[in-house]
Image (cartoon, rainbow, N blue to C red):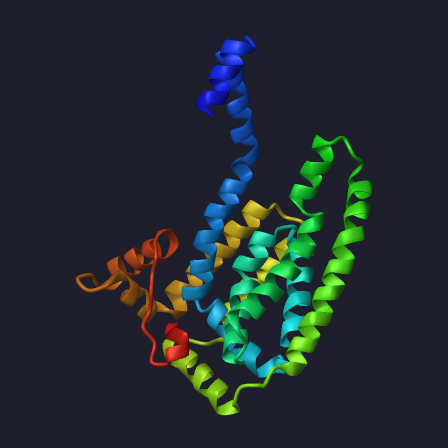
Length: 272
């Protein structure tokens, strides 16, 4: 940056004021993306420690058949990503739950991540970045989307075929292993349908086209409420020794939203 600024000022006579103005405009252009990334970090932790992701995994492994898991995973992420207009949000929320479900069913993490990302980035083709690209290049939005579909649709169709073949080639995990996994979740977290209100409310906000930042913030706040109501033991463990009562809950929430946390589980698969 310093070299480019020096060349601009020394060789082409560009004033530092103009360069500084361009820097400020560029930072402003990506500020919303930076805010979204910051909230997603808190959102992922809140959904996990609030019991949302464990509950989704708990019921998901019992509902989604292993043969159709990978293709379902891709389709679910594509639908959510189209609704949210954000691949990051999709991966950080439903993607984490699907990763847990896939691991419980014995799939390799690479296959699961591939299905999640393939679906998430399909929806990303009609997101804010698409609008930004069309406006910068002075191209009609739907013309831009239509031409992207020439490569996006064949790509996702090929992906779905591959994931379908991989799913039918997969040897399903022993039902006893899934039972151990779900039992471990139930022992570690308070599994309840009430926490599923968080993704339901999030979905409603998405359907009503509420701003991504507002949606993510509300979803995080609701997950924090679930942490305080249903997962107090988890919060006390996160807070560590030396604190108790309300102070432990307060410290646990702050550490969960702003730092790195880890929990010990009796089931090795959960600890991993």
